[in-house]
Length: 632
Image 1 (cartoon, rainbow, N blue to C red):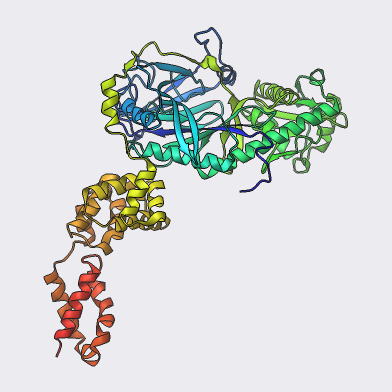
Image 2 (cartoon, helix red, strand yellow; image 1 turned 30 degrees about the vertical axis):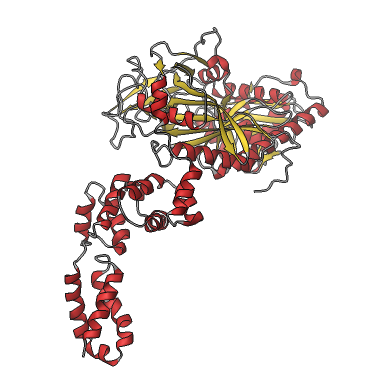
C-alpha cells in the first residue's frame, strides 16, 4: 500500500515481536496438557485483581490504570486442562524442560548469548488474563542476530513465557476467560529498534522470524497460535505498542496507520498551542442529567430509562479537532471515545459531530450555555450508570490534557482494518520482578551441545532442498509459508509419494476444500500422514484423495481406513478392473469395431464412473486400450 509518507523524513522507528505457542506435552508451570479443551467447562470462579507494588516499591502505571477500571473476572475451569496452579491456589511447578529446549534451539539459531541459569520473572498484568495478576516469563537468549536483506537485525531477547487465559466474553464490568489456554508455553522473540526501514520490511522480518520458529517443528498451528506486536514511533512522537496483529499482511498497514496517527496528533498539538489552549482552561465534568429530564428525544429517553446519569464538560479551544481524521477510518473523537469506553460507558457524544439524528438540539444548546461554551470550544456529554460517566469524563479530559504536550505512550489493540484502539498506558520497568516460587533452570554445556545437534534447518536451506525435489521456487515458497509445512515434511519423510503431488494436495486441494466449506482443520498431521501411507500402499488411488480428505473431516473419530471403507473408496485390483472393462467393452462392441482409435476416449468416462478413486487413471487407460485391441 502507498501513503505518500517519506518514512526516512518523519523518523519512523519500529520494533517487531512475535509470539508463537509451542507444541509441548504439558503447560509451562504445571502438568496439565498444553491444549485447548474440546469439552464444556465444569465450573467457574470469580476474582477481583488489585495493583500491588513491585520489588522497588512502585506500582506500575498500566496496573494502576486497570485497577481503577474496577472490573471483576470470571474464569472457566475444565476437567483435564485446568488445575490448582491455573487458578492460583497452588504454587507453580518447575519450568517445563521441553519448552526450554525448544526455545534454546531458537536462541542458538539466532547466535544468541545463553545464560548459565534461567531465572523466571513475574510481569504484572491485572487485566484479568492471568488469575495470579502476573505473567511468568524467562529469558533463554540475549543479543541474537537475524540476517535479513544483507542486514543484521539485532534480536535482544528470546524468551519463553506462559500464554494468557482466552477471553470468552467482555461485558464491561465483568470479563469471562477460559483457563485451558492459560499456561501453554509461548516463545517470544523481539527485535531491537529498527531505523531506516519501511513498513514492508517489518512484514518480511516478522515472516523470517516466524519461519525460524516453525522450522523447529514444535509449534502449534491455526488461528490464534501466533500473533505479532509492533512498537512504533515517529520523530517528535512516542513509542506506542500495537498488540495482537493477527496476520502478517496487517503489519504494514498497522505501522503506516500509526505513523499517520502520530503525525496528525502532532498537528493537533500545534493547533492547540496556536489557539492558546492551556491546562487551566480544563474544567471538571458536571452532572447535566436534569437538563435532559424533559427531553423528547428517543435517544435521551432510552438513556434515562436505564437509570443513567449524564455528565458534560467543555473542551476549551478543541472546536473542530474531534472530527479531524488521524488515519483512515479514525477521528480524534473516536480515539477519545475509546478512553471513555474503557471506563465502562458506551462512548461520548460531542458537538463536533452531526447531532441531527439524536433530536436533542435544544438540550445541547442548554448544556453549552451551562458549561460556558465559546466559539472555539467542543462540548462533550457522557452517559452511564453510577460513577462511570464521571470516571469516563475524567479519563477523556486527561487524554485531552496530554494532547497539549505529547503523543501518549500507550498500548493499543490492532483492529482487522489496520487501525488500532486504546487499551492501556504503556507499562514501565516496575512491572517486572523475580518469581520466588520456582527454582532456576541450569543451562549446562552438555545441554547446549546436545541441543546444537538438533538445531533445525533454516528456511533458506529448506527452500533449496524443496526445489531439488522438483517443486519449483513458487511451490516451495508456498509450502514453507503455509500451515502445512510440518505435514509436508512428515509425509515426505515417511512415504515414497511424489513430493510434487503431496505439495499439490496440501496447497491446492486443501484450499479448494476449505472454500467448499469442508472443515479441514479437523484433519490433523497424524491423519494426513495416514492418508498418504494408504496411497503409497495402493489402498486408495490419487483420484480418491480429495474424497478421503472430505470424509476424514466429516468423521474425525474414525481411522482413515474406516473412513475409506465407509465411503466405498478402497482400491480394486487390476484383475477386478479388467473384468469391469471387459464388460463395458463387450456392451459397446459396435462402437469399438467402428473406430478403435477413438474408442478409448469414448469409453474412458463410462469406466471412470465405476472406478474413479479406486485405482490410478493411468492403469485404467492401459487396460482399456489393451481390451479394445483384443476386439476382432
